[in-house]
Image: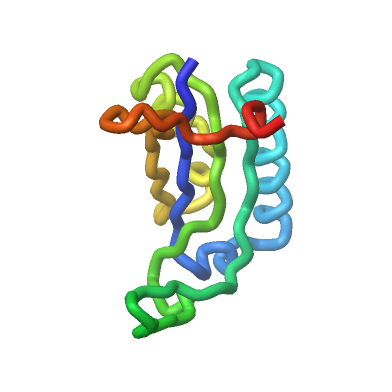
Length: 130
């Protein structure tokens, strides 16, 4: 199995369009999705992200930071999963409840790089750190 990150993106205020009942239904579906992935042995971790923070850019002591809530779309969470290949990871992402509760969700599906091919360096993982 290979590791993939599902990076969940959505409009910053998409939750405000949900009724309290719809929001509770969405959270329950997320819990069910997490439970299913866990039972299947596919979930390494998953976390929502707070709607506050900064985006930084620059270098050499010249830094700029802006609140990311100025952006229309923000990253709202992630799932770190196991799948046999990119196609299977995409199929898992398509089952995410974000798509059921709005039209602005996007999920970036990315393989996790475990090793630098040019140097042979293997990136540390929790299992390897002991």
